[in-house]
Amino acid sequence: MAQPLIIANWKANPDSPGRALRLARDSERGTAGVSGAEIVIAPPMPFLESVRTALTRIKLGAQDAFWGDIGPFTGETSWHQLKHLKVSYIIVGHSERRMYAGETDETVHRKIMAFLAHGFNAVLCIGEREREGKEIPAVVGEQLTRALLGVSPRHLSRLVVAYEPIWAISTNLHARPDTPDNAFRALVYIRKIISGLYKKKAAHAVRVIYGGSVSAENIAGFIGEGGMQGALVGGASLSSAHFSHIVKTAASVRGQNLSQNSLS
Ligand code: PGA
Image (cartoon, rainbow, N blue to C red; front, side, top):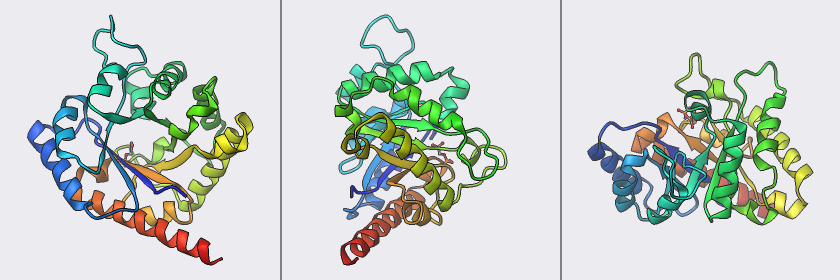
């Protein structure tokens, strides 16, 4: 089993390059010595370069990019340019981009295709606006299927699916984290769809992570009972202390799971 993947999504924070650099340095220091987790920080575009200089073990992510190569795409940042900054992960289709930046299933699909084809790890965000009861709404499956249409099985090991119910994102009204139990349902649901689209081995290579009000208190449940292979962390990643705590807890829960599995 792979190490848990913990991605810090800073969104449009913090407010200055100095603060971004400090947060990156403190997150790097706070997680020093943790070997059982893969850690990524996705800062806003203007801070990518300076944050990169502060990171050694932590990998660099981007919160979005354009699907086209360099050229006449005013206002966009192309994946090609991110290559030079050693960005290894690109988040795609976050609900805030779908909401504020007109991201559609079609543009999400184009981005997933482009980023995977050009060697990036793509973090595909899917999730419902509302959920009645425990059933995962069909819109989640539709987002997933549309995004994956035509994706080569060879690229699946670089695909991460982030299940992020919109109602669970900390900045949304009445937000509350999902339960590990429901996250597990989502995991099974997502895995079933991917297994329907690809052969077993390729489908198995996709990592599924959870996002939405992840904290130092609830991460253990999502990785343990929830079976998630990591987390996309928004608000809590803006505190290096909280973020480091999340990373350490995820690494230790995964370690416990592995030793239990080896005993059974
Ligand atoms: P949150 O954000 O952890 O603040 O809920 C997660 C996200 O939107 O990626």
